Image (cartoon, rainbow, N blue to C red; front, side):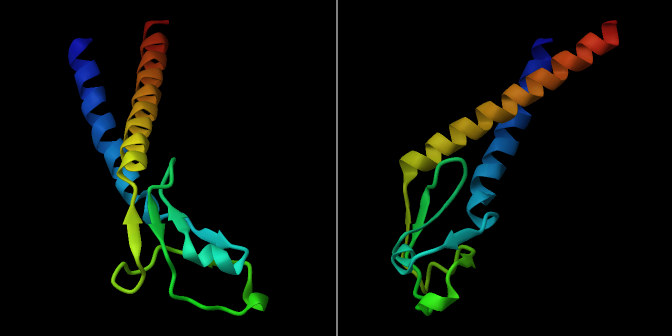
Length: 111
């Protein structure tokens, strides 16, 4: 049982880290007002990447859906406190789901 828990913990660390690192690239940020282009926020579950967009659309083009853009063209800031909070939360959530699945498998196997 102890070996299985170590395997679950290792998998949770890898999967949680991967989800956290890739999370700014997956969601789409919806801009509804022009001043929101100054603070586009990305990341899951806590927004840890803030980007200023160089786009200047007309008001009639809103709402507009955006992905994270090149940091070379748009000033980008990473909030490390939110990143580590997101990392810990995601790893904990993945670990909890893995443990629940393992317990359910154990119950079904023994019933």
